[in-house]
Length: 328
Ligand SMILES: C[C@@]1(CC(=O)O)c2cc3[nH]c(cc4nc(cc5[nH]c(cc(n2)[C@H]1CCC(=O)O)[C@@](C)(CC(=O)O)[C@@H]5CCC(=O)O)C(CC(=O)O)=C4CCC(=O)O)c(CCC(=O)O)c3CC(=O)O
Ligand SMILES: NC(=O)C1=CN([C@@H]2O[C@H](COP(=O)(O)OP(=O)(O)OC[C@H]3O[C@@H](n4cnc5c(N)ncnc54)[C@H](O)[C@@H]3O)[C@@H](O)[C@H]2O)C=CC1
Picture: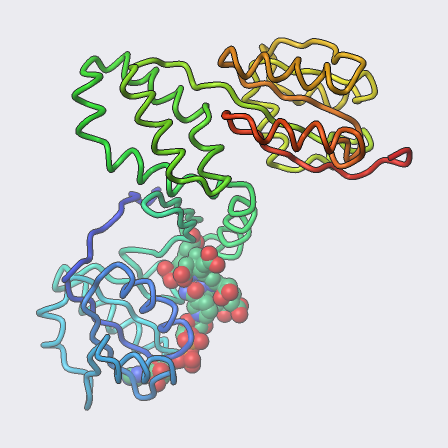
């Protein structure tokens, strides 16, 4: 049977941990981060747990294990290397209806701990249900690299203005379209560029206008030597959010095939300055223009200078370097 996924509020709630090794340390760090009150019982405590105890972050329970400790706990984490003891503790917890995690036995656990990607307040949790913890970990690492770091600040923006959003856009269908426009528009790009204040201003302007348009934006993509496998994830993301693709004839079809299907496509102007003007006009009209050049096309003269000028315009302009091709 599949496990039931849930996110638990442990702030101020008590968790009993039995075992004090490497694995107990990992679990306790996550528990403390969630605000749990942690009590630990172990013959030997990992030095970092001793340090946490000295700082008053956790309480150590001495002597022989006492079943009465369970009375106050809402969760039990069992992390000793004594399988028989672990099984006995799991049975005690079950009898008292305390949820229990046995770190080396999914079958004895009434809850398990997933691999987590943290873009607070956004969290992604991955579970293999105990089938293959290493797989959950690997998947986490892969997703971690591809997930926009602006997600956390973006979620915080939505949280901060939640009441105002509901008030300005009481109609759900309209609110949905507005959310989509913010998520696909300039605000995340500004956050990625570290321009938090500009992002908030753009966010509030969109809210004020109740307008679903995301605002103009430019992405300059170095498309590399032609193999789509060599595109950066950020470049791919931009190509998939484009309203219009401004395409250099030397960009490979294989790369273009990965761009958003319903984006308009047009050939780039011959002269570099005219090409700059071409993408600027799209951004000024509120469109997300993605200009593709082969190789590391925006770090070679004279296009580096065109890119530098575009970066001074009011709308966000992101440069995605490519792998230089033989010809530059
Ligand atoms: C059932 C579960 C119990 C529980 O909830 O704790 C459990 C059980 C076991 N883990 C084992 C091994 C390892 N587990 C990890 C890592 C993680 N294990 C986690 C969860 C879970 N592990 C739960 C299931 C979750 C699911 O399936 O989705 C993660 C996701 C979360 C966390 O623990 O924080 C965290 C990744 C965090 C991240 O990186 O994102 C590593 C890698 C490492 O440590 O770096 C190793 C190799 C260590 C080595 O072999 O050296 C073994 C075999 C022991 C052996 O073979 O000897 C068992 C027992 C068995 O499979 O039978
Ligand atoms: N869930 C997971 O992610 C993983 C689980 N494991 C498994 O988790 C278990 C713990 O791993 P580690 O922390 O590396 O082990 P460890 O050997 O470092 O720590 C074991 C801890 O349990 C305590 N302990 C042992 N018997 C006890 C008892 N009767 N009463 C009180 N305390 C007792 C020890 O004092 C020590 O603090 C192992 O069985 C290991 O195979 C290992 C890797 C990952």
